[in-house]
Image (cartoon, rainbow, N blue to C red; front, side, top):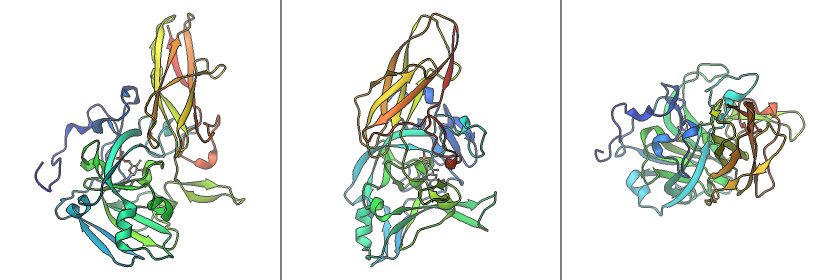
Length: 364
Ligand code: MTE
C-alpha cells in the first residue's frame, strides 16, 4: 500500500464470493452458509453503504471534535494511532438483516441472513478522545458523522446532499465505543470505513459510523435522517406510538447449514450449524427444532464467549427416514433471560428481525 494512501485504488475482486445486493453504492451480503469460523474474514464481511465509498488520503484526513466542547480538537491519523489502543471482538448486524423474510414484503435492501459478521476491531476508546476535548456538564449526545454524502431519493427527505450521521447518548459514547482503524489486524479497507470508523459494540450496525471525520457534542437529541426517518421504529412505552432510533441488538440465532431448500439424505446424519448473538449478555442456550416447532432440543454451544461477539453452535440432526419437506427453527436465550419472540412486532417496520423463522429443507 502506498504510504498514507488508499489501500485499494482500483475496483478489486472484493465482490467475489459475496451476494451483491447493490453494485453502487456497494452493498454486499455474506452467503451465510459459508460460516465456518468465529471471526469473519474481512473479505467475507458484509458491506452496507448508503452513499459511494469516499476516496480518502490518510495523510490529509483529519478527525474534528467540536460543538459543546471546552477545546475543539483536530487530530491527524498519526496522533490518533499514538493514543492507547485496545481491541474488541464485536458482532455487527445490520438492522435490516433478514428483511427478505418479512411478509408482507417491505422496501430496502433485501438481506437474507448474511448482513451480519464478527470481527476484531482495534482503535482508541471514543471516551479518551472526548476527554481531550473536555465535556461540559450539559453535554448529552455525541453525533458521529462520516465523510460519505449524497442525496436521498424517496420522501420524506431533506433537500440537497447530506452526510451519514448517527448519535450516541453520552453514557454509551464514553463507555465501550471504539474509534477503530484496524479490522482483523489490518488497516480498515475502504468499504469498511478507511481510515477510521466507530465500533459501537452491542448495537445494530447503523451506529458504527464509517469514514468518521466529525464528532459533534450536543445537549439535545439529534434528529438526523438516519436517526429519525431511517433506522427508527415505533415504541409505545408512553402510550401512543412514537418514533425512536434503533439502538441495541436483539437476541437472535441463525442457521448457516443446511441452507434454505437444501436436499438432505433421509435417514442420514447432519451437523446443523449456526451463530447466535445478543446485547450486553452471554448466549447461554440455543434450541433447535427440526419439525417446525413441535419439539425442541439444545444445541452445543461454541467455546468463545466474548461479551460483544456471537456464539457459534451446532446440533447433530438425525434426518427422518420419511422423505418430504421439514422446517428447521432455532431459538436463542441470553444470560439476561431474553429470548427470541415467536411473532413479528409490526411496530419494528423493516428492522430488528429476530423473531423465530422457519427454514425449509427437503428430505429425500
Ligand atoms: N457509516 C457511514 N458513514 N455510511 C454508511 O452508509 N452504514 C451503516 C454503518 N456505518 C454506513 C455507516 C450501516 S447501516 C451498517 S449495518 C454498518 O455501517 C455496516 O458496516 P460494514 O459495511 O463495515 O459491514
